[in-house]
Amino acid sequence: MDSSFSNEFDVIVIGGGIMGSSTAYQTAKRGHKTLLLEQFDFLHHRGSSHGESRTMRATYKKDYYTKMAVESSKLWREAESEAGYSVYTGTDHLNMGPVGSASLKAVIASCEKNSFPYQILDHGQFTDRFSGRLGIPEDWIAVYTELGGVIKPTKAVSMFQALAFQKGAVLRDNMEVKDIRRDEARGGIVVCTTKGDKFWCRKCVVAAGAWTRKLVRSIAGIELPIQPEDITVCYWKIKEGHEEKYAVGGDFPTFSSYGDVHIYGTPSLEFPGLIKIILDHGCQCDPDKRQWRPEPDLDSLKEWIEGRFLGLVDGCAPVSMQSCMYSMTPDEDYVMDFLGGEFGEDVVIGGGFSGHGFKMAPAVGNILADLALAGRADGVELKHFRIGRFEENP
Ligand SMILES: Cc1cc2nc3c(=O)[nH]c(=O)nc-3n(C[C@H](O)[C@H](O)[C@H](O)COP(=O)(O)OP(=O)(O)OC[C@H]3O[C@@H](n4cnc5c(N)ncnc54)[C@H](O)[C@@H]3O)c2cc1C
Image (cartoon, rainbow, N blue to C red):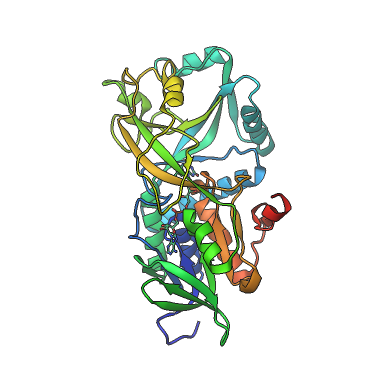
């Protein structure tokens, strides 16, 4: 872009979480003058991309996510080698549930379809393998797969921001966007902040996480069904002397448990002697009026942990809790689409990552950059992510 104005860009990305940061990296890498705007401090803890661990897994009921996860695991490695440090540690992934569980059947079907190696463990085999660490009820089985892992989220966001900066992107935090409008005189898009700054761009990508619904409503009057949920991350204490058995880098996997409630966790990684075990649901919230009082359904968690996690300190209570937000869509599919209406294809929305987006961030960044720069994303079946699906299936 040939511009002598410092406030003019090819692409403006709104939202400095993992999705906005990986998108800004992509557009800058492709040689486009890019601005990344974040309403709070960079690497803040008020959205969805902060903290110490996110799970990687490739087994999905919906095959398009399997493809995206496989692609992303490759792209994570490429970004790491460009940055010169690591954010993603590979592990195996363990799925547990009652015999006949639909979720486990879907995991097995996904492995079969994609030729992923997997092992089914019955109660006896499971006990042999995880003896003294983890147990399952007699009428449960487990499916063991290879493509798992743990990504360090804050470090990963920082990595994409650093890479975007290296490629020439301008990064500005404490810049809350309050308006996005068409530039009627010359075409393109004008982005305005609450502080009175005005920026012009050819294309704009909105990756505003839990704020997406509010922002899109205020700029376009469109109501996207993206519901923020407050999720509580719980860390549990491992008995002294047992820490190594659950440590990342050994043979303890990332895991998902599909019983009455969906529970998941990672090997011990961030806090020595603690392990993350959390519920995959929370309570609806307003991202601007959070209570900061994590109140998870501790009874379900404790009931699940007791008798299963054999190396945790008795008394079973989390020793540390953190708040984070999911952005849920009704079908738990992402939104990656043009905003449409008066904005046509000049404003792209990336949101509604429904609690399973982090692992996909490198692929999502590619797709959002493709949509903004080329108006299409080759090889991606976009119908699953279109805004129009909400009208077809209200
Ligand atoms: C507890 C928890 C566990 C999770 N576990 C996993 C997991 O194991 N595996 C997995 O794949 N995914 C997981 N996820 C989901 C994943 O973390 C999210 O899908 C992902 O972080 C979403 O990123 P985002 O960039 O869309 O949102 P965010 O990180 O919230 O980024 C959006 C950014 O936009 C900014 N913003 C909003 N409005 C404006 C504005 N008007 N102007 C400027 N900036 C604005 C916000 O401040 C924010 O920084 C988990 C999520 C949580 C909460």
